[in-house]
Image (cartoon, rainbow, N blue to C red; front, side, top):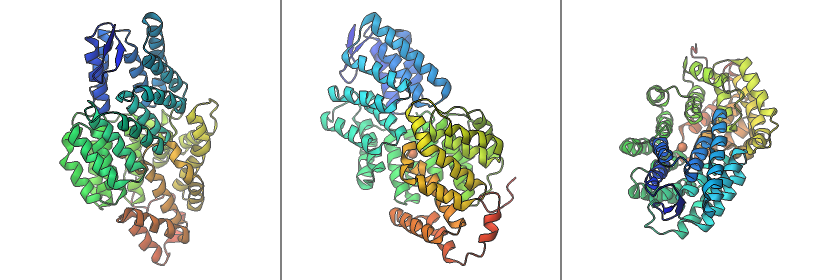
Amino acid sequence: VFAPDKTGLMMTVACPAAVVHWDATVEHFLSHGRETPVALAELLRADPDCLMGWCGKGFFALLLARRELHEVACSTLARAQLSMAMRGATAREALYVKALAEACKGRFVAAVAVLETVLAATPADSLAAKLSHALRFMLGDARGMRQSVERVLDRIGLDHPHIGYLLGCRAFTLEETGAFAEAERIGRRAIDRAPRDAWGLHAVSHVHEMTGRAKEGAAFLEANEGAIAHCNNFAVHVFWHLALFRLELGDRAATLALYDSRLRSEKTDDFRDFANAASLLVRLEIDGVVVGHRWDELADLAERRIDDRTLVFADLHYLMALLGAGRDEAAVKMIASFACRDRLSDQDRIAQAVGVGAAAAIEAFYHGRFAEAAVGLLEIRPALFEIGGSHAQRDVFEQILLEALVRADMAAQAGLLLRERLLRRRSNRFARDRLSKLERPMRNNARAANTHRPVPAIGKD
Ligand SMILES: [Fe+2]
């Protein structure tokens, strides 16, 4: 039968009661809720041939960017295709199957184009809007993300049941395209409309990060912890933002405490959890903090992901862990894996265009070849957005670059980029510290260039 979902769009289901589970699935997904797979399982129990259910499951699996889940996504695609053959599909549902088929081939750009076709016909489809947003995020397409959600918001009313979540998406795209004041305003409006809109809350944190308001950012997150209580491991990412604020404020002990109690309390190998952790350890080490055994746990997981090759962004963070833990042999294998990709996916192209250079530069940095690291990172800097993630996430590469420039005594370039950073962020301890280092005579340079690790040797075990 055909039945309307909460947004008024018709879907093919075995019985109208199944739609309740679909609506719950979509709402949990929009709020980054941990109940998403629970609601989806209930839907597929109520209607084992639900095409939208299988398509949702396929996309959710692909967004987790793990080799083993690619197979899961392909089998959900087969179930969706079977459902379509058995009981037909609406035009919108057929497009979802087409989009999932593209995504399963690793062609996210093509999948996004199909989802945009869905949105052109049915702008009320908040799942299509969020999926387009999420896939574009993984492709580093900030401008496209913003245009997509703005087109949707232009065409739906304020009475749309997911308006808060869509405003949260818009807030994030505004932030990623540099419209900070507007991003903050819309982000706060999103949370007012949808108190569980963790993505909208997170957009405001990004504004705090990018505009150098660490103290305010930390206070804001602590005051709004309730907005992430329902979240899956997206909550961990929000605590990562809190840790960035603590580090910027110079509170290293609090940063490490957050790492232990929030970022790695569960030792998952989810790529987002992994990236949060590896990225924070690199930043701590650059700041001269001894992170001790923490790399080992991550490196054990990274060794198992050497041949994953699902997402360049994830692979680069696996590499950081291998280098951080001093596992040079595994790191060599990982670096080689960026260059030998033969499939024709978007990620293969990105690995060749950016991944190879980024990996080589990080390796050079971790082995004290700072000039080589700096030159390598400067070369790929204009294209780095292609690995996806946010400005704040990719900032770890910027911090490695800036530290490498300082350590390689490339003072003119270091000074220029650090002053630019300070101007952009208004307040930034990271840039201030390094600028004052540059202004001092570089008497420690020779010693620093000879150290094996990129950090001052403070008894790292
Ligand atoms: Fe973030």
